Image (cartoon, rainbow, N blue to C red; front, side, top):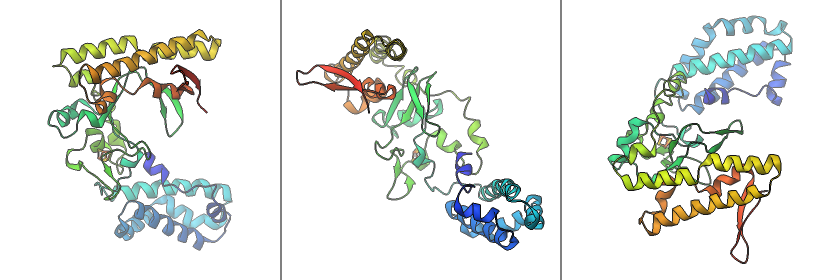
Amino acid sequence: MKQESSQLPDLESAYMRELVNSDSRKSFVAAVRLFLRQVLAGMHVESHYDQVITAIKRDPCYQDLNNSWEELDPETRGHKWQELMEKLVQVAYAGRPYCVRCGECCRQGSPSLHLEDAELLSQGLISTRQVYTLRRGEPVTYSIEGRLDILSEELVKIKEDPESRYCIFYSEQNGDCLIYDHRPLQCRFQECWNPALLKGLWDREKLSRRHLLENDPDLLELLQAHDERCALEKLDAAFKQFHQARDLTALDQILDILSQDTAFRNFSTTKLARDKEELDFLLGRPMTEIVRVYGMKVIKDEDGVYHLVQDR
Ligand code: SF4
């Protein structure tokens, strides 16, 4: 749905203001044609133009606007135009019921994995170096709304490029997925021409570290100990204590949790010989990164002592 709505023209734009203020029916017809061409170009199916314009001209919403444009006031034109554009996008997508591998969804971030994706890892099509864990209780910012939320269940996700935030399997050079034939379940459900399908994914069980490590008691023990000592709920409570009660002792608690997290990571690489690249999967994102969601960052002074400071 996000992709569809993002294609709607901005009613506040100069072009749209000019259009709704114009009494000319010809301007209305030209704007419909122009907008449709833009939508189809974004979907890489410009050749569908004749088919979609014919369908939209039969729609009562189009016919109503076409017959009454000159008599309507600008505000009513704006509302009706918006309604027509939503219809137009729906009709355009309905005419293209297949993936053209445009990469649009891959550029919006990476997928979370589901139980059905476990075999991608067991078959080595995706490695644990290419995924990371968002632990239960982790504060996450939803990029579209900027809303901060606490995760109620663990997620294992494909890593993203640190700069672009694109899924690491998206090739900018080819504009395509490098593992398309073996892409995760979420990618298969993300049919931009059929947004309703994605809702069918909500009830599917998410993949967790414990599903993938069930035959490795040593690692399960490590996860358990890390989850207890470096619980994100403890971190959240300490930040609340600091931000709401201005209790400076909470900073010591936070630094203690961070140093334990660092110790677990060092232990995993030195004593368990785990690859550094795997740590974001085994232990989740470093807690020194997570504190940035709370507006803080860790710095080391010249004596090698760590401090928490405001992250501007
Ligand atoms: S796995 Fe492939 S299809 Fe899925 S988001 Fe990444 S690049 Fe796109």
